[in-house]
Length: 81
Image 1 (spheres, rainbow, N blue to C red):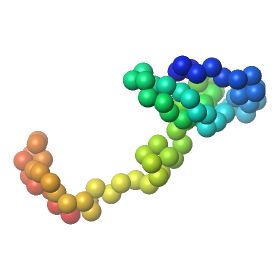
Image 2 (tube, rainbow, N blue to C red):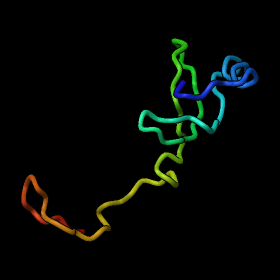
Image 3 (cartoon, rainbow, N blue to C red):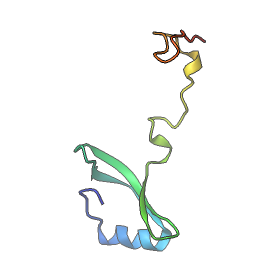
């Protein structure tokens, strides 16, 4: 894991149910703290699961309703809603 050891009861839950969490106290490569669940797949590989809150509220952002602030750097076309 990323700079956080699992406690005995967390390991037990992970092995029995295939997931545990959300758990706090993980640290990214950049040193930022984060919270995530841990899942084990069919090949017994671990992975972080950030759930639906990865973007803050779980909802997709609709960019078509936002105002245009600059032309597209590739096509030089100003996209608007």
